[in-house]
Length: 325
Image (cartoon, rainbow, N blue to C red; front, side, top):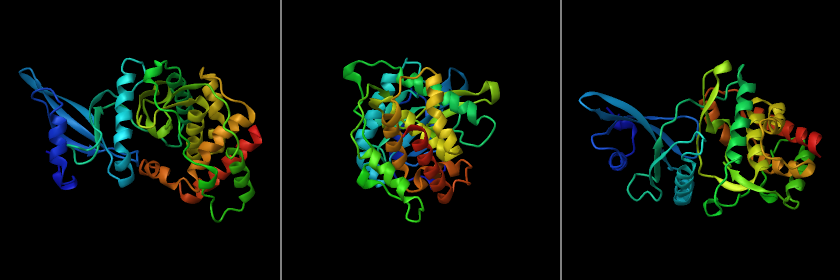
């Protein structure tokens, strides 16, 4: 049975909407929260289908709902884009969910929502013996995303920056203010020329599912396609690299571009041009990446305090200047 005490008052309308898109006789038997995200509420929906005279055959779906006011306001565009991308990815070889239904404006559901198939695996962000192997698999998966060819009419929107020089939040207690000033000066310059490609645009360890360990470690899913864009491969590489630097230290972030290149990824910019994309992403996490780390802490990374994140972000900025400036 579903524990309605933990659900919003409007759950009945959402349940009816989901079940209206199921096959005859199928129904929701349970729902449970999924961890790992902060922009939307993610729920697993357990479904039972008639077994042709035998026992019922269960399977699962995932329901994404935008609840926070900011994301609810932008939900029609975000969910319509994700729905279009999921349709586009069917048969592509990218391990993405299959779209079941979308109510982008929340016309029927309690909140703007999208329901899709459930993928096996789970998010893994621990410091363990598989950290390097996961980074290699992340690089290979990102290279596969960038290799997608789509008709011009199916291209997603052009990329958008997530920060700007005047919006960078410098930590108030930093002793390395000149480092931050140098970084802002770089992104205040001209946008480097680039060759566009298909971008996930929010590709990082929190949006990739894994199964297995050691030699059996494998990627089983890439999720959260609401920010999918067309732009420079460097930008996706930069975003995953920043997340790795925050999770595992600056060297892990610095090395990701090399892993991506070794995995057969697209040609990346060099020198200061590559530095631009790296800093444009890293500065969007300032001052302490507290918000993005919330789901990581839910997954067990309680060591990622604001002080740790600020220190790693500053060390990462310095490492980028040491390598690319």
